[in-house]
Image 1 (cartoon, rainbow over the protein chains, first blue to last red):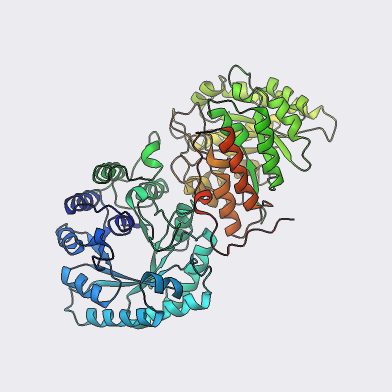
Image 2: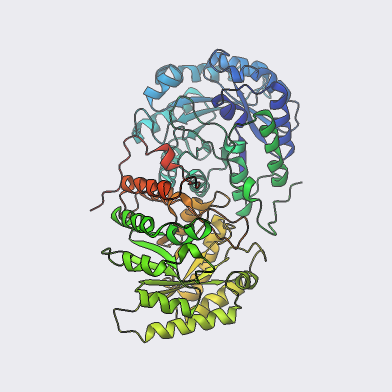
Length: 309
Length: 309
């Protein structure tokens, strides 16, 4: 089984750190992770610079990332205007978040569900008009899907309806996002079954989990057992959601890749090389806390890392 | 499904901390966890005080713990002499570790496999001669079973042979112990199947996992899915194995109980009360690092903890 590890640190990580990482450091980070074999990186977000100055250089980051052969360059877009900029920059994949909690949607994107779905439709229309070969992949991400810090649990029927609506609006697929760190392995399995029941297997392949309560990798295991093949994570575990108080801590890419390889799953990633990328973050973000156990403990004696061509 | 959370902090945690926790603090900790609903606590180890001065008061701790109604008072014993002291103190459960890595066995217990198995037989004989009702449960714990920091991977045949030998020596059951933090979910499932194939389902119900590389709870999930029902953990994640360099970090009881309850499994533990026990450690071990995500993040909004009678 192949697992696609999708690095989201340059977007989800950096947006929750006050300090602005210089463009050159972002480039070095992305280049080093791609060289280590990471095949998909969410490099930024097309939101107004006034909202997230940390990501104001996303167009330049995309342009650089696009020069790396074989790298899927993903970006987050909050709306059709952001998608337009993303398409102009040449991104390979656009992710539009839709908070299944409408309270969180209003707090995070300042839009109702109907408004976000309308943006989704406009984005899908925009992509459809592009010449073949230039069309980015378009994912609608169901965020706060495991519960919201403002609303608590979200009814299954609402999640199912919104998944269906995103596909109807023209998304290529939907994703699940544990924005708040509320997921547990049973909920992961239950929601994957629920959403796949609506959008089909190909309509849901990826998940974005946090490690807020330490369950991140257990939730990944549940997702893999349910047949998902794309897992988001962040180098050094940096990041979280600045609009969901107390909900910090992405899954640590280093620990995730160690787990996958220890299980014999194929990631295409050179784990030793990946562990070395961490030093770029240490240098570019001095004093910023980095997470992860494998970087401290090292690899087990005689551990045979995945052979990467 | 019921899961027995077996707290090992007073033994595995304290033995790897240089500082000696005063007897009164140990009593307060054990009493508070039992009051929160924890039904089994490994309260100490009957090793010479010269080796582990932190646990020199184990007999007094056992005597105190035995006054708590319904609490299963477990201890570690390195040999028949330790078992004799444990029986005299009135412990309910004795765990004898057998490192499947003979190199680690020599380093840790200074005994070969044959010597440890001989101790197991002497302990079993000792227990058999006790009047019914006074016989403690006797577990042989297969340690370094997921690999050894000195030897690396251990052959399956060796693990199977030693599991069989422990049962033949008279153990009531065997346990699996990831002394070195090398386990991954696939290995957990594979080894449970391997050992249960030798000792039967009732011959293996519990597992001791570490969080050395961040995989602790994912490994717990794999163990539960394989049918195990007893999971060791340590409040605040304190502990590890002082004889396996770099192998620190027990599973955090607070995060484990949160995961189990979020999954709808029954633990009998009052999670809010459990989280408060942490302050006893903070006071008794000032400056000692405590781990765990749930204590920092708090419980999800509208989280319904298990109802405990």
